[in-house]
Structures are given as C-alpha cells and as structure tokens.
Length: 419
Image (cartoon, rainbow, N blue to C red):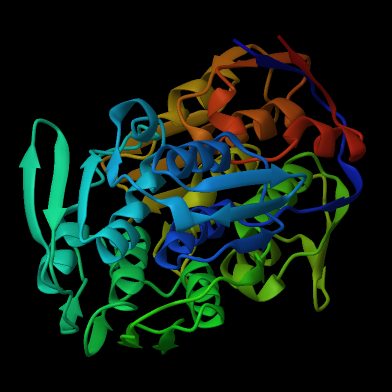
C-alpha cells in the first residue's frame, strides 16, 4: 500500500496546470452509452475512478480505449445492463450509470454504490426521479433492479434534506433525453459539472435548456449520436492547490482553470487577508505569514464546496483566532479532524460544526487518510508542518487527483511516494 512522505515547511512556489474535472468526467463517460455511435472525450484525468468507470463500461460490452487523457467509447456492442458489486462498490459515482442504462436498454441491475466513507449518502432522489419517468424499481439482495418499456417526460422534483443532488440530477437528465415528451427537473443541481454534462448531451443531439439553474427542461428525442467533447477543468483540484499554497505561505499560479467556478473560495481567501488575482483562465495567490480566522458554511453550488471543506480546515489550523466550519451537505464529513489533531491542530466538533482554534505550528507525524478530500487535507497539513509527515492509504487520493505528488513537486514541495 502506497504512502506519501512529506518534508514540511517549504512554501509552494511556481505554476501548475489542473486536469479535467473528475466529477464531470464520470457522468459524461456514463452518458456516452446513450448513443450507439463512438464518442471521443478529451482532457479526461487518469484516475482510479475514471479507470473504474472504463472497466464498468467494458463489462457492459462497450469498447473503451484510454490514450493519454483522451477516451474513446464505442457503445455499439453494449449487451449487458448489470453492473457488478466488485466494480461498483469502489466508486459511488458509478450510480450515474443508472439513468443512461435504463434509457438505452430499458432495464438495469445495479449494485448499491460504494466510495468514500463521509456519512449517509442516500440514493432516494435517484430512485424517486427515475420512478417518475416510468421506471419500475425494486431492491433485490443489494441490487437496484429497474425496468421500463417507455420512459415518459414529466415534472420531477429533486429537492432533498440537504439541498439538490448532483448525481441524481445527472441520472434524471440523461434518462430524460430519450424519454417521450418533455421533462421538467425542478430543484436541479446547479453545479458546473451538471452544466458540462448538459453541454455534452447537446453535442450528442439532446434538447436541454436551463442548466446552471434549479429548473432544467429536457425535450426527449428518439436518438442521440456520437460526439467529440473536451471536459471542463477540475475546480476542486484548483482549490486544493490554492489552499496548499496559502497554508505554506507560498505564491503560485494555477493555469487552465475557471475562476468563476470558485468565487466562494476566492472570496474567503481574500477575507483571510491573502492576495488573489485572476484572469480568464488562471488564478494567482500570494500567501502571507499569518492570516485571519474564517467562518465557513458548506452549501451546494454556488456556495462553498463540501469537497473543499477538509482542505480549508487544514489551512485554518494555522489561522489567527478561532474559525468555524459548518457542514450543510454531509454533516458527518469530519473524519479528518482526528488526524489533523495528531499533527498538532486544535479542532473540536459540535454536531455538524467544527471549531478550529489556530495554532502557531503543526508538527509532522504519521497519519492515515479516510477518504479522498481528507487525503488532500492531510497532505496540505503535512506540507505546512515542521518535520516529516507520512500519509498512508493514499489510494483514496489517487481516486481524484492526477499525478498529485508530481504536480506538487513542480511547486517545490518536498513530497515523495513510497511503495
């Protein structure tokens, strides 16, 4: 099992280019099977998750080739509609195949998904939405079993206890493209990854409008065609590098990103007292030796991203004063708190809120990653700490960051992977 060994205390400096967005790549790769023609997708990050999605598509009968960061998917020979536990259990985002499979095949048998352990993540909105479109659904021995002779467009409300759901929106959106009539998705997720999915579907011939708002309209068509598409940049990777530089007092420029996707983060970095400049497709950050405490509340987009909560917490461990972080998306997403405290942080929990009392220094030690974004937080803390830090179980991190240690090394980080 691999681990990272980090010599902390070196400010990050230089420039880095982000990869394509993992959270856009997975639903777009899944949606490619809506057509019977080949699709070419550029800027796909080489990650455990994208490779798992490629394996699932191959299992279903599609032909998938991965060359550098370009994926070619030929779904013409798709023959199966069952996704097995062995593949699905490692990646929650595999659930976004539900909609495309039932739309293409008229039936689906799908293992309940796995992924990061960050608290309850129910799939009731997925099943509710597909049922509204005319899919008969049962749960049999840990599998979701669905069938439909004819999908029919109807109004679908996707509001949940913690707001809208990105993957549920993706499932209903993709299934609705081949439904008869018009589908109105109310309380749809507004995330940029859903906008990217809608743009991809339109390039296949789908009739979609309203993406980026809580009201998406889909006019069903009889057939979709293959396409060629380039993914949006990864906003969470962008934010992770910015927070790593901020925590180490560094100065970096992140290229090939979209600043408009990260207004909530950039606003908080400026509130902390850091200097942030931005262009059309780049963001530059100039760190300081000290920064102010912040109050953070995670919300669905355009609010502060839950996927940057752990990294922000690592940054705030060294702030002046007491910060608060309230988790409104996944209230139990605080498994990283104990490991950050092992590095010398002072963090206490009160239900869905964490109080982070800034300390003068963090100290290197051995820590263990619990999930994808917690892994990145521990790396950031290790980069900012004095001495050596070992971060184990980094297979979590490999699910979401392409060549992470290599990119950090170009920013003068002293980090190496040990096999």
